[in-house]
Image (tube, rainbow, N blue to C red):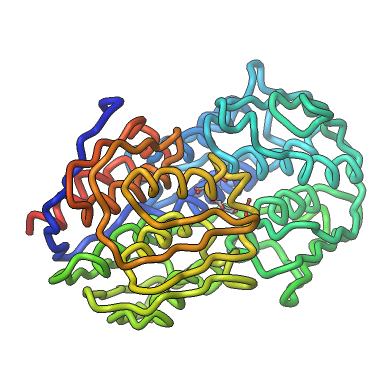
Length: 432
Ligand SMILES: O=C(O)C1=C[C@@H](OP(=O)(O)O)[C@@H](O)[C@H](O)C1
Ligand SMILES: C=C(OP(=O)(O)O)C(=O)O
């Protein structure tokens, strides 16, 4: 894809029609990893063939796991966790924080040496949050910046269970500790500060693992084995979010997105849109197995400004960039608070959202833990940059739908990380 991409703008074309967006990224990663740890053949349907999940496949292949992937269908030949082999080369996680942190939890319990590297963005992201508790369990991990940054070197082995109070709300940290806990002597207990996405808990149970769960506390006994299964991956609500916002903003829009994952720990954007007065209807597919999914129908209507804070944040953390775009089109002041975690994503998403939306004339201000957006004025044309962050690139493409002038997007190729067919899907919704 071109480094610069000229986006559709000054068109205000309504979005219409039906679409199934690609598979959920969080669930796709986990299905490959747990399949690799299980005994037997795990099949995955609806897999997200985006760069991040392909990095996960490549890492596990380097540990000797046979994985066949044809677009959205994957089969993983697991030989049990003891079947993972010492990799002969470094494990390259690319741009993927989920691959890095969850895989560290697995590697921590393996009796071999491995080295984890990623791209420039991964090299800036904090890993101490998983490295510290994994060291407490007995893993030997070192890396740049006192073990906080990649490249990281891991010598795993005999782990002891711990009880751990997490300092941040992070499903990646929680998941890494559960995966290490499965390999530890004793019962590992993890206490969360806020409820985060529970895909790991749900999928481990599907692989036959017993987990004790209370709202903010999880206990997992070491030594349990995973049994291969068939995983159906719902469509990614974080990808659907871009079109939900586009359809809310452009007058005359009406779309229907099918098979979208509706796990309540992930679906906070729906609550925010409802609170704002969106014309949104949800129809859950009651025959669904595994994670809940269904159809979301939405049409454009006038919205009220919103406040997103507290327990909302983990349920919609990756949707905040595009919700900020929406806020620029709502009369009044919208606020996002308690979202410091945005600073440690692929970019500092408080800074990149604010700087790029300002390029298009938005009245938006960064705060210590979020943003203040005074909406209701049209956006202008301009040059924006994804800064190598897929969600920023897609959020800007959606902003371009309502800009009065041409918008060019630099580094648009970042979008391949989570949504390779984003532009063709957007074009389909516009051209119907
Ligand atoms: O567990 C996961 O699959 C994810 C958890 C979130 O990160 P944190 O755990 O860092 O909050 C989210 O931002 C990321 O896109 C995917
Ligand atoms: C933060 C994200 O992913 P990861 O942490 O896996 O890089 C994201 O997809 O927005």
